[in-house]
Length: 207
Image 1: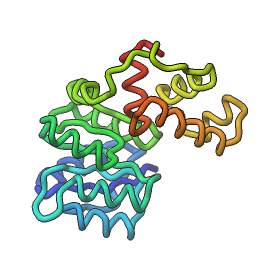
Image 2 (image 1 turned 30 degrees about the vertical axis):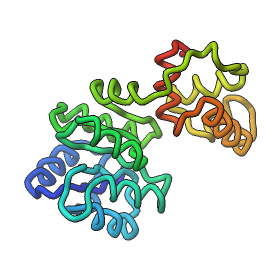
Image 3 (image 1 turned 90 degrees about the vertical axis):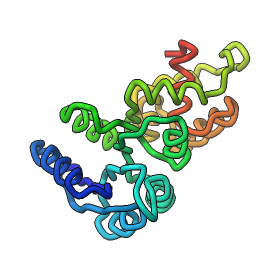
Image 4 (image 1 turned 60 degrees about the horizontal axis):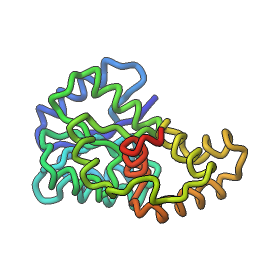
């Protein structure tokens, strides 16, 4: 069962999302919060698997809540669900460490599937948000980099949504070796995180 914390300042929207989530036997809502500060406090108490986070809320917004939650609990996934797709809001969410960014206009089944994907370790971004992220990725050609075969394996598996433990099992490497190798790869390509690495790989036809 995937435990979800709903974070939105509009109560009727939380009620609607709760009803949608209740229709799936694999998901359960364990709590609700109206701003980023309350979200952090409830995360500490409830330890959800996924925090479904709105971005624009009074007092403490979604970027605050996302940043604080990811700093305290890196393994808890934060999936932004908002009506705003402007570049500034997207950038703030990604910088805060969001594991995904989708819009409220999406069909209910796509929202449910996005929650499950993020819970499983896959970064999820709807199409127009993906295009926004691509604009921020380093505009370099792969020919500028000397990628080893192992680094290419890391990239392919990350794009498949594999976490460090799964990568270590598939490549028969120690998990620490994988973690250090991916960190060096990100530094080598001047990228911030696995999401940017996946976008870079797709942009440059590495997968």
